[in-house]
Amino acid sequence: MTLSLKDRLFVASQYIAPHHALSRLVGALAESEWGPLKRCFISTFAKHYQVNMEEAERPSLDDYRNFNDFFTRALTAEARTFPADTRTLCSPVDGRVSQAGAITDGRIIQAKRQSFTVTELLGGDAEQARRYKDGEFATLYLSPKDYHRIHMPCDGTLVRTTFVPGRLFSVNGTTAEAVPRLFARNERLVCEFDTERGRMVMVLVGAMIVASIETTWAGVVAPMRRQIQHQNYNNPKLNFKRGEEMGRFRLGSTVVMLFEANTLALKESISPGEPIRLGQSLEKVNS
Image (cartoon, rainbow, N blue to C red; front, side):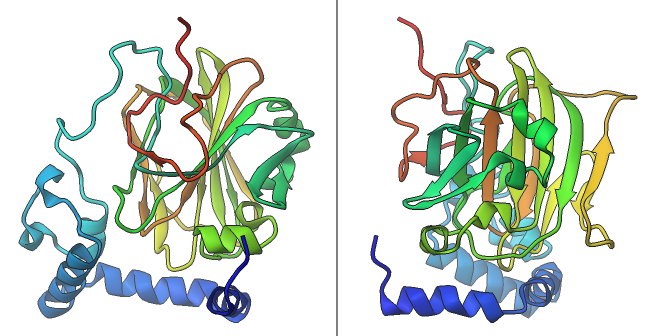
């Protein structure tokens, strides 16, 4: 992919932009409950991105207290379905497949001519990274128009989380093509789970003007100290069922999933550029 001059300028501007200050400003505006401002934001956004409010639990735009409340809106129970076989591993989000496939030589493909190591993604933990040697990965991009709650792809027990501070580059396709090690440079939350197939990681990646990342067990993830922070979850255990909400993005971003070797065979349709929906199966079915 050859970047246009416009794309190159867009990428270059991100290197000098005040990522966190800009995100905090957008976050403050998105939290505003002032009627004229929130109505303008919500109605303009819904029209521009052609948001399907018929599948929302609250279909009226007037029912939301601020833009963030609208952006992280819940869907009706019938809006997304999961396979009948409860062992089937499914997509945790609505979005598009950015990249997916085998973890080779400890590296994950980001885009053509771009990759990063599992160790970098996990915040420098080489021991944790070795667990996913020769495993599989799937990087799922959520655009602004998508549903922004993140659900469990299978039953699992939370083992630990790692907050990794970093930059907040945009995570769209253009930036993924141009910024080396993008997902290993952006601020992120690494969530590791025990499942019946072994360990699984879901990395929630922050991005430009993403006001915050939330989890259902800890709320908004916004540590005051800008350093790597680990949190173990042993007692009490936090157990999740497939399809249960585990987090959400306040504005769009990306989820990177990691699986141990020989635990998952990705479907051919889970390939770069393909749309994906919450509950859609990620794996091949043995005939």
